Image (tube, rainbow, N blue to C red; front, side, top):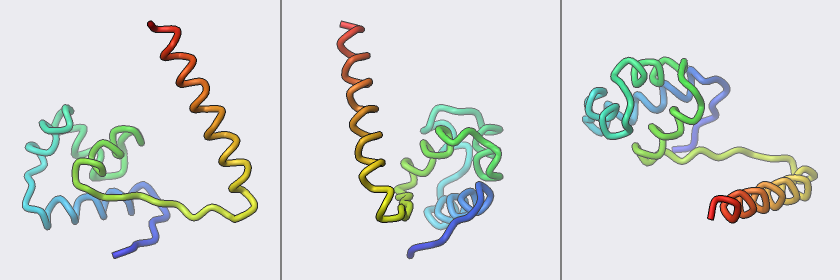
Length: 95
């Protein structure tokens, strides 16, 4: 089911609902993701870093998507290409 989410708390509620529906204990999920139970609690309250929240979303199989205005797509493609080029350059520098 597709939901419109407009806040970190809304995203956190969806995450919590999926976790509970899947019968996954919070401490078990925290362990799997590699964070403390308190951090997992913060995730489910919408009070965690976005990167941590996305780790939980991925683990639960929740896909997040955004709608981008059509006119912004060329800019998005340019920005994505530039970010990819930076990543490749950084990886080459580490070798």
